[in-house]
Image (cartoon, rainbow, N blue to C red; front, side, top):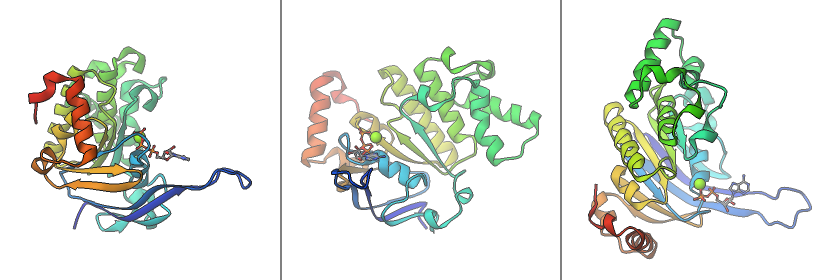
Length: 264
Ligand SMILES: Nc1ncnc2c1ncn2[C@@H]1O[C@H](COP(=O)(O)OP(=O)(O)OP(=O)(O)O)[C@@H](O)[C@H]1O
Ligand SMILES: [Mg+2]
């Protein structure tokens, strides 16, 4: 059984008001995909293609108008959220917006642990130290507030929070997009290590061809809510010639000539 199956999901956003002239907009149309445990699906597409909407749907946050989302064979919209919440986590692009600035890193990482597990205060403290060290920070960082971290460091805190409950799937919605080159490479390396260690699956949403190649086992291109390309292996994606993939590869080559030889 696959970890995640999305079957013919369609979604549209309705009119905001009854008399609004704004028509309903189809944002996703007949999207199907399968994700196996321990693998990464790279989801590429232009701004507004529907990528984040798909991410929210599989996090259980937005019920699709049609289709099914099966996590370990069970439809998440027919299941009590507590049955899968712990197993599917998310890391967003903007780490500062994703945390409460009034909480310390320790409190931020502890949140899912106190929600989903029953640890004694000592066991919780020990777990927090293990988690923060796992993402390359130190026990002393647990007492710091978000404002004391750089963007890259705070993204590590968000990753520690995401892995705290041993999820099976993490949605990475542009999770490395606002980081500089060095931080991006380090976070991608960390994500790859965590994937191996915990047999984690990722839905990696991005515009970044180089980043997506560093982490993904299969690739999909979403355009105006539809899957217009599916590459089941890194080799297939590398050789892809469809216009969208070519255009983003060309754009990347034009702006960053030195990246031309860099591959996974
Ligand atoms: N809550 C909402 N209500 C109405 N329309 C929405 C809502 N959320 C998203 N949309 C619209 O749905 C479309 C898809 O949005 P979505 O955020 O999924 O795109 P995206 O591929 O993640 O884009 P980006 O790369 O810019 O993050 C867009 O046209 C957007 O304006
Ligand atoms: Mg988005």
